[in-house]
Image (cartoon, rainbow, N blue to C red):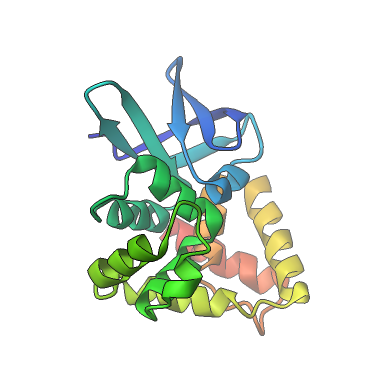
Length: 198
């Protein structure tokens, strides 16, 4: 029903954010990872959302990337995985790493996620192993070997893009698509701007 909300970040809590759009403050439940992406109150952000309607409550769940929202929707499509557990799992590990664990059918690693026992882990693998997009698992593999130097370069590029007016989520999204290993900071920014303006 509500695909995304774009607006000013007002508050960041451990498991939720408040975004103002046209004078309305939307409280959006999110993962720890996405909450840390939305760390600068006052900046403009884009939150990819899903409305959860239950008999006793209506709430919004949202994330800093559409991939993480897609992973949440896959998790909650599995019997026994509700909103709270789905967010708990995504708060326990990055969605790309989670995708890789499910695709490789690593039951033990899945049990380290919040609220996941052996039976739940087995059910997750059984139902999702063939549904996890390959792009997510490739992303997990690429980011598993980021050197401290590359992390510094990525942060500099992120700061530069945000200073040009892009939101944190927009900048992070485009930087994930760029192979920075042999590029200078200037080349990274040029490549990012090219993608953002396409």
